[in-house]
Length: 437
Image 1: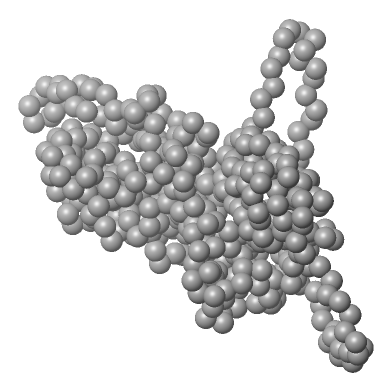
Image 2 (image 1 turned 180 degrees about the vertical axis):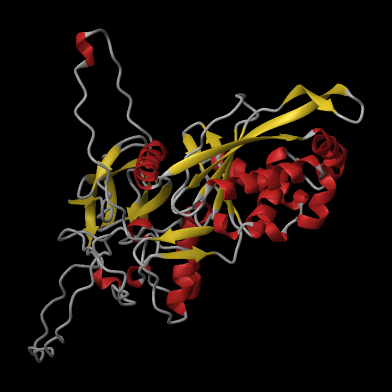
């Protein structure tokens, strides 16, 4: 009999939630075979078997919270694991040469200077798993499939994502012999909150564990709020003509399997605004006192899901038409609600749009999604009386309120006001979309 234990979950990952059990009693498993699907933060990853054999008993079920080293199954007739010691040869081998002295690579931290050397192509310098366990490889199934097709051993790849998560670009970079990209340096943690009082003294209470998505939201929002001095600019746009145009092109879009929403139109307008005002498509590097201007326009779109807020990214928005953007937006929103997004599909945004118009409200102050420097919030439009000077009368117009939160370290109030006016003018005159967009 042998115990099948959960591999090391990676640096700074204390636990994970089981979302799928890939084995059952009586199954034969091999070393390295995926046995569990785990959710950590916003990603779902596979846990490989550290031992081989026949499954006698499965110790976990979907919904359980598990930790590194925890027994997840019992094996009968266990096969030797990949780490099992080999029999000693008849002739003692000659001692291996002493390794050259080298400074071990460490995980980058905010306290280190920006000149920290890149880690070696081998992943040997990553945090090691406890003795007797295999290190869990943080990679999506699509990345694992690509690695198999390219003949790449993921144990040798250094991931560029959070907690060294491996992306498809990491696999391709490794296969081509390029040096790995360092994962983003963790930011200083915010002060710990004081302990809660005992609410049960005042009446009945109920506790519910946060989902991985909610825990990730807590961390990212706390970090953004504590590190970015934010200001919010409010404005309104007359979308009467744009809404009429949207309804006219809706049948054409439906024939191509797309539903043109105001969010799709806002994506195109935001891309034009980011080109006109490049500061909003940048990030601040406080370690080098530099501004990083991005030569691409990838925009995140906040999606409300049953498990929490997810922000998939639409790439190269400036290179796509409104109908194409509408089709892509519908696809990624559906994937977000079904929890089928990959980590790569939620990375790389340089600006974000959060549209609450379908729910309601007259305005809100969205929080900037670090390392971005701005985010647009859209509220519900309504019919309002607007004075027409030429006719000397009020006219009913469809008015949409929107807001822009920005990092005041880089963006001044006048810049934000001009950005909002540009967006409003594009919304008010659809003819401009063909020129500016």
